[in-house]
Image 1 (tube, rainbow, N blue to C red):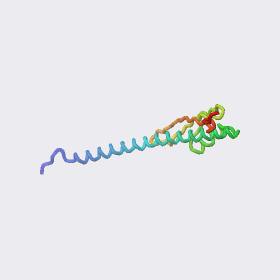
Image 2: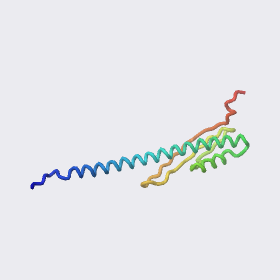
Image 3: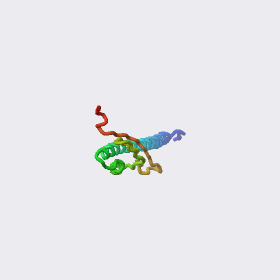
Image 4: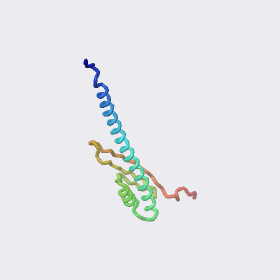
Length: 120
């Protein structure tokens, strides 16, 4: 029986295709983690800005309220600015380290009380 030189080529191709699929799946997981961190930072910023604006309206410390809400949503406040009752809050969320990389996202949100929309 004579051996053909291309025996085993399908096995090599299957292994290569399997490795390629693993790399693509890993990239998809990393992309998903980055998107999740961005959305978490954005929602924490929105909620913190709303809490800050509402706290100022009721006579409390708006930035302290914003920091509390951000912390409870897994974020930290990078900056907080209050212009009368308009709160501008920037939050940051950092993902756990995966494969030596951690994703970080900063998002800014602004909120004003509903009374700002009323005409005088």
